[in-house]
Length: 448
Image 1: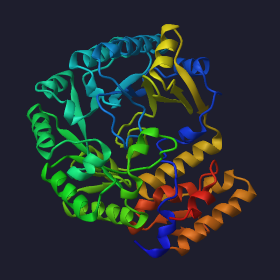
Image 2 (image 1 turned 90 degrees about the horizontal axis):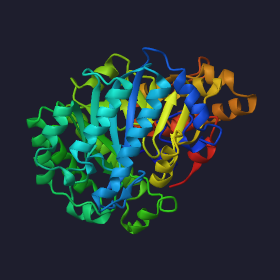
Image 3 (image 1 turned 120 degrees about the horizontal axis):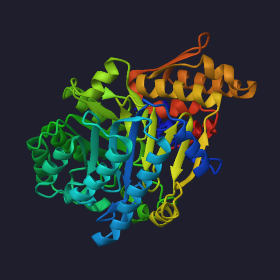
Image 4 (image 1 turned 180 degrees about the vertical axis):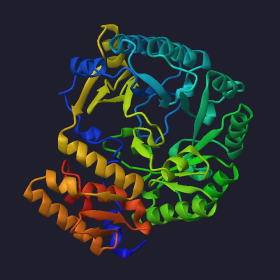
């Protein structure tokens, strides 16, 4: 890592899975406003469906997701029923409009639910929203909860994409994050998926975990590659113990420093590229013939709440606690707690708790940031034209500083920026520099 880049390593830039980010959501969007947006969806509009299952069998100390540990299965049934009721409410507002083209189960742990209950949720989607056989179905799985027959059942329901939560294969690292699962277990799950006909399998890895070193992470990468996944996501662990109390269980002294984190990022990138994978955005990798790699080549790669995606739908409808919808420039997020979510649905009202409506400038910034994250290049002329003089000067100074540090090439006349290949891992920092909604100066200047 270049010395002049060290100051960027711990800046807390948004992940930009939405713009504006969820940090800016507020009570200006509630059930009525969200309901009106749903009622205005076009007859043949492509829909991306997201379903959040918050339950987990065990607490993983690193986790930043909205989740709830549950040890009695009967307690999750009211949530399954609430999901079906929410789907019916949304279906009534759509009135037959919209066409689901993709559906994703996230969590938490979606396979905490038995296949029969997952199928009940799918049946509700099919009945109310018109799920068809050509829609792409994907699901996140905890390998520790995969039972014999589960993958066959999922394939029979139409799931063609599966993501396995691996994080790291090293036993010491696993113990330090309270997620112990052997390589043999993961290998067995991969075999079950392949035998069931799952043709798009992804592994999720994390760098920056306690007790992680270059040597242990190199071994994790080698083991992951040996399983020949179609895709990999290599995320950076964000240690936020004040916001996430479960992370206080992690030994901070065992966390790798900023320089080691940067080396782990570079190691993953180099290793996966040498193994034949294509870099997708800043934290995904895919085989050359995978749909993500094809989307990148054809200029169709996009970013949404599931990360980098080839999903063609511009509209997302989220179901379940904390899920986020995006409908014609409006973001709507459901109640975060399971209790509040179920209470709203029981009262026959949409469980939307907050959100935001994009301004014209937001739309311009969203497009520029999406280009930056997906293609590492952006035309900022619209952003410069839309902001005030004060922010223009600040943004120019920040971009000049990034150019001086050789993070970007910056054409000042045409307002076009290009991130240099070695600095792809800093693209969120670059995005923060052009984001008028945050104090990007604080992000850019935060020291290691």
